[in-house]
Structure formats: structure tokens, C-alpha cells
Length: 365
Image (cartoon, rainbow, N blue to C red):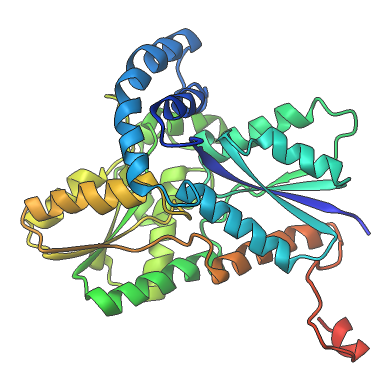
């Protein structure tokens, strides 16, 4: 029986909320040419002379606010997720956690899989919507490292699952519970933003330049799979359908922009302000691009946007918790991975139910 390795990858986290560790993390993250896609020397000066010296102290204080007893939330949820996945697979599948930046590194995760003598590796980035700065960066790093091995196994990268039925249902279920609890007037889907130029750079795949694309094109059902903006709008639409939301009952926006260059619109802060000014009093925000809660969800949305909404006239603001290590989300990943495994005609790698002695029952599973 072939042995499959699975590398579950998230963005990354500093080793602690100490200012020095945060600075190390920010440098590695922001020096990635897929994250800040400008000439190396310009990027080096921007990151090391401007961004890190000024932002590291502030970001360190923010990490200290959300740090759990066991560590960074991203790390804690990641470990829980991988532990649960390993508990669902049999011995033919080994699952390891890695972070694109800092620890546990992609290199250490791959090395563990190599030592386990896997014959194929499935890389599962925890980014449902493809972007060059996230999934693309993970794939590039994996290929760079594995290319140095004498024996290179089959490598697969699950690049996008923004429209997967189970992923959509996972978020819809969480939002539905919050709708019942908080009775919001409006739902805002907020996704991590990227510079417009990064979509323009994808024109090699036949995509229309984002800067020339009609503002409402993505909202009207543009389904180009590797257009990040279109994928986000598609995710919102599919979740809204599950929840039976009307077209004017929800909005899609983009957060976390950095620098002065134009990023994909509409911006979340401007949208929150506009909703409040138009009379929305009770707002629920959810961020389906983050499958684990982190700085951008807990603090940027949960504090900054909440304060902005209340300041501009809103009265009630709530945020839907992310999927983290929920059992239904674990099952979704397990099913996505098993579909990939079965494409190579490998047997479904699930643990047999205990206390089953009927062979026909076992064979039917």
C-alpha cells in the first residue's frame, strides 16, 4: 500500500509576542517576493528600514492581546486540526503541520514526511481562495525544497476550494447560529485584500486586468477560478444562498491593506462606515478567507471595525468565529484529501469503525 504524506500549511506566526520575535516574523513574511512584489532592493529597504521598525512594537502588543496559554491561536488551532486529521486517517497517511513563515517550517514538515517514506505528498494550504501571495507562495516554497531531494515523490497542491460544498456549509452553519442569536440587519463578508497589481500580473492566464475590470463584474458571477477577487465574491454568494439571504442582505469587502497602492475594492473599513451611515444598526461580520482566527479576525475586525461601526452610528456589532479546529471542518478537509488520494486509485484511508466484525460491512465502507 502506498503511503501518502499531507502537509497542512498556514501563513505563520511569531515564536512569541516578544518584539524581537515579531520583527523576525515580519521580515521573513514581508521579504517574500510574492507578498510585496517589487524589486528586491526596494523591498529590502521598505521592510527593514520602514515597516518592521515602526510596526513590530505595535504588532507585538496586538499579539500579546490574543496570545493563548498554549501559544499563538494560529498555532494552537493548527495543531488541534492536524491531531484530529491524524486520528481520522489510518497508517497509510501521515499529516504534518507547517507554516509558510517561521515555525514549524515547511522544510521541517517535508523532512518529517520524507523520513516517513511517503510516496506522494499532498499540500493543503489553509487558504480557500487562491492568491499568489498565499497558496502560490506555499507551492513555490515546497517545490524549491523538494527539488533538492534525490528522490522526488509525487507532489499535489490543493490550490482552491472556495466553492466546495462542505466548506461553504461549514461557514453557513456558524453564521446561521449567529443570526439566530444576534438577529443582524446585514451581513458583511470581509476577505483579506491584495494589491490590484497582483491580479493584473495574472493576466498571463487570460484574465482581464483587474484595474480594467468593471467594478461589479465579480459580483455578477465572474467564475474565473484563479481570480482571487472573483473567488471571494463567489464564496459570499454561495454562503448567502445557503442562508437564503437576499442580494441586499449582505455585502462583500476586503480588509488589511498595506501601503498607498490601490488594493482590491471595496475596502472593509469604508464599507463598515457606509453601512453605519446608511442606518444599519445591527451588523454581523464574517471572514471566510481566514479558516482560523488570528490578528485580522480577532483584533482588526473584532476591535477596530467594531469601534468604527459604533462611532459612525451603529449599535450592535458581532463577528462570526472562524472554523478553527471544529469537527465538521476537520471532516471537510478529510474528505477533500481523500478525494485526492482516490484519484491515484489509492484505497480510502479511513480508520475502520471499532467493534465491527462483519467483513461485508467493513468492505462496504
